[in-house]
Length: 291
Length: 206
Image (cartoon, rainbow over all chains, first blue to last red; front, side, top):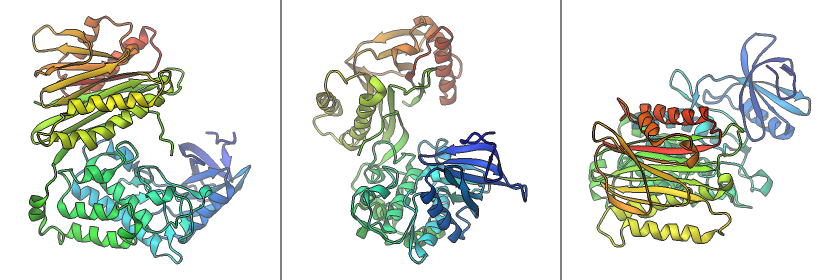
């Protein structure tokens, strides 16, 4: 297998196959010449950006993220070697659940992802993931969810400039697309809310209708407590959301243990909205929304 | 009454952009199904993509709340208004063709413009029949019938009876099998020289 540079080796690592292509990088499955283990190698011509990602990944030691192995410079770019996580993406898994996955399963995935994000938010200064989406969540054969691609992650709560806007429309918080607005951990809370809504309803937030709150409020599969949690995550105003992922992690953990179920029935009776059962929501097009 | 549906959306052999955009939305409210199916074809798929995006938005934000009660105007009038608005937004040159179906319970409304084909496959009797529908059209749908919405290229070189034969068969109700039948239809056309991009939706009323 040859890499994008036309060679079968990058930085001494034997290229076995291509795993994927992103907007700025390619990911390969490689074998190390030293320990003969397989790794995932990310190659990008944007050296500075990849080196920042490498520094972030090296500083993160959490089971939710792939373990950092090495980095270096190759011809006209740089590479980052990390643990290879075999499995399928959450996006691929969701194809089997067009009307949403069972609540227990969604809470399990949500807990794993929220734990990783909460860990990032606890760093000093806080790390912000910024690109939460189903395609960045890998479900392993053990059923655990792990996060990959820290290419959009940033240190601290800096002011956003035009050049460093990142995210996926539909998943990313509105302030991520505005200029001169502070990016806070609440951005990731919004992304997590969208991810949870996707898992429960089967409606891809990156596809129309992008407004998740609209259909979450009607979805019969989402219980009252969960709905309140989602509404709090998906507030357009960052100050009205959970301040960081640790709050959401706690809520999800309480939900899983059953502490949050009391009163659901009473609340659902009081609701005065139409209850919908989403059966299928498909939108296929190559059209891209321009912002 | 239940609806099973599946779709085919394939690029041509040149691997370029697919100019076809399609939408299939099925939601159950108070025991009845509200469905919106639509196919759009336009240059580079831009207008079609925008139109389907607007229709999905309309379906969730306007149609579903309107279906919850006895409000006036009804979903059909609301849809006509939305289509008028979408068409008015773009120039004549960039517009494409579209064809769709709005299904509320057993009431249907077929809408469209241009060369999108909508066929009715009647499987209620031993000998299935197929006929092309004109739009706009409204009425009540019956159990056992199927509807095929597609771009002209999907069935260009196939006879109506051949289409019927491919779509109609044992176990036709299951979605997995519907996918296989649609693929069979596309491959049959491809073997006869249709190598362009295609899109199609097939739905069966149970």
